[in-house]
Length: 329
Image (tube, rainbow, N blue to C red; front, top):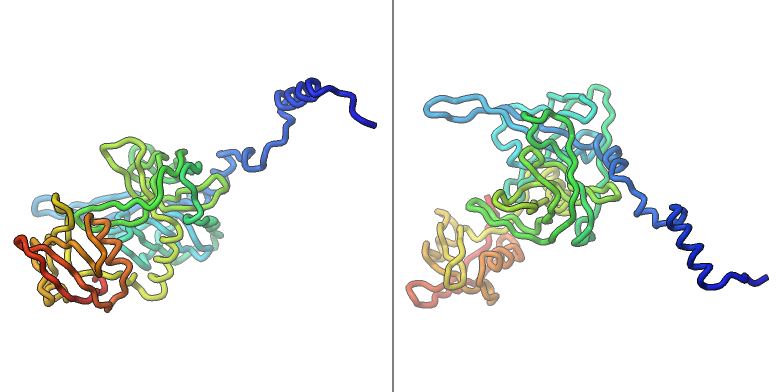
């Protein structure tokens, strides 16, 4: 029997169903952030550090706090290198109030700002590792949550969650000490103490490790992609270090294009090849170099021990140098 309802009546019925909340939405649209927090929170930890700092001529005690995420049931934790860099003693606090003080640093990589911790004695406790996602598949505009323990000394050690989106991918952050590559950018609030905590998608999977903010801006934070972090963790656990290609020199942007050599490491192949402070690098293996990003990308594409041809400008003249890529110390 054919339906005798008119098109207008059908549309009115459909509208009524939507108003009554009976229209079936995709499963993802029904996710509650509170539910995600319940799932992820047991995998998030606070990392408390004690150490010393020099004040005048005296060493004074110093405390620090950061965050981390449990990645194995055996007690491996990802956090930031800068959270534990100066630590003499570490304690790890769980969301249920459990505190572990038998914690070791099993691997660090300052050039990605990643550190791996190990709880040595679980004392019968069962840990819930976080579910890791695929940061390569993460999309710009995707909703994410930042978990951590910001301003713990002022606010207490209770877990904090903030919401935002993935604002950009493949960001490069340059500092005097290092160049950090391929970071995720987010506008989810990240504050001191959030460092090392997970950046999580709305299906509860970790896609990043919260790392840094731009302090003079609003809503610009960065996270290590979880795919990068897991690769680094594997190298740290298997080899004890991460192998990275390096030219043997520190460079900075030059106002007229290219990158200027600020320092050449003594005893490096670059020094033996004749690279000098003040040289402006314009090509690496016939690839033009206009920015520090160009230089970094060109070097990272090479293997340790590989021969590299460099074109530099020195006092207005072009010079051609041949050197080898080293392993970053």
